[in-house]
Length: 137
Image (tube, rainbow, N blue to C red; front, side):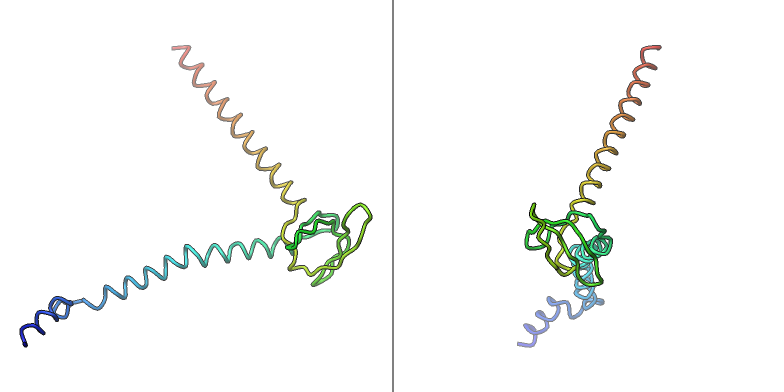
């Protein structure tokens, strides 16, 4: 009977030195992985949304969380007034209800496209220079 208990203890790592550290290391690794895979990206998105909401300007076209599209008319501390539709209805909404700033998104998209075109032109120019050096040889 005692030999069975001793075999179970040795199989469980009771006799091996440092047997209790490995589970702790694994837990720390799992917590670290969860932080970098879930918590950090969520905080980054929240920070970007907060910056977008704080940088709203009069005349920006926005989309609310409910899908209402309008143009910013008045900005206050916690709320904004938007103008919607061709009949110019005005609505007061909370600042946190803004989902997207379409004006800034369109500007950003244009900047990204311009950067891509510049990169393509630079790559084509570099390729032409390489081709010219090969033709000279």
